[in-house]
Image (cartoon, rainbow, N blue to C red; front, side, top):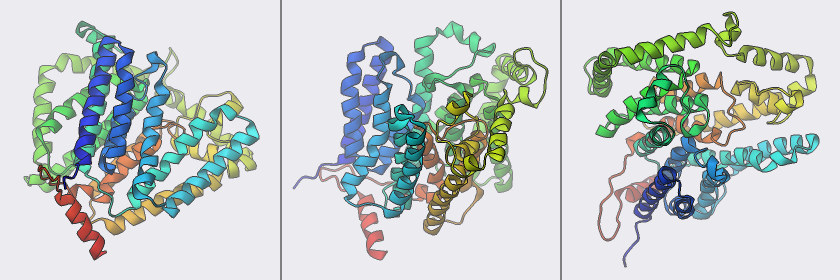
Length: 448
């Protein structure tokens, strides 16, 4: 009996998906997108959790790439598809994840019905229910997850967003516009969100224990792209990332653990010397963004691009309105005040669901992290937690809760805690499709 290696089929489907998507964008032929969607959905259904997570993380930095075709919602459908594929393949329900998801859905649904914001029903529900898949994967100790593969696909998706967008929207000679102050957004459609994806991808590449040649290619592209987003919070976060891993390198000395970082730093210094003029322009533009905003005086509000004013406004509303403080106004709370969102994910949670929702939110993270620490096979180091720290820093200046990418970003940041990169696969390419990984998983189930 010949077995079909579904992971291999999923891999071919995803390669075909990105090929057709590239043709769609480069030649503006919308027809290629429709078979691409079918192949992408097929890859998610056929593949294991590694392929599902990888594919969605590749899509996250490209979620707005089909705005011109007015079918961006299909990308959101693909992001939600792993949830249904997981239920169909496992044929069981995770009661803990389901309880958490239903509680948040009920809370948000109550706000929508009370405020009659019915047009937000589907997008808000979709943004929440992805929690079920993320929590299910994290709580399943037998989930077939390969950390390195996921990280590299996420890095590829982020680089794809930058390179393809630039090729289509600019000539090479127009790179000067980004060096002189214009902000680069890629297919994320927002330079600040795009910088969040880049910071997370850079951190995850550093966290990988064993590196390949592609890591040396992805990293400089990601950092160069981050610089031209001119995101102040992202640049500060990048500085924290580089200082942390530089300190880690010094701590471990000439250990094999620091070989990648030392090579990257040497290559980075060499590139900096070659492009010193361009880097100087970027630094100057960055300081200008810190120093001045639409001609106003320099203060903490100017430096944070009016975020302090927004956060202060919403905090005042929370203090003076006990009902709001306890139950919130829902994920579109800003429409009540006709203001922008708070640009702070932590304030978003309280404004959306109040202290009641905040308690539930914290309990979800506590449940996931506590279970992951129980399963973690290695001695814990700061590397495990650093991606979580990085996204927490970025959440201080971004409103991410209502975005469809929120739980996928959280999922990526939690993966190191799962200890996945100690279980890299060793596939045997044979006619039977036999996989050592499957044998390893069966042994774990028996021993458990």
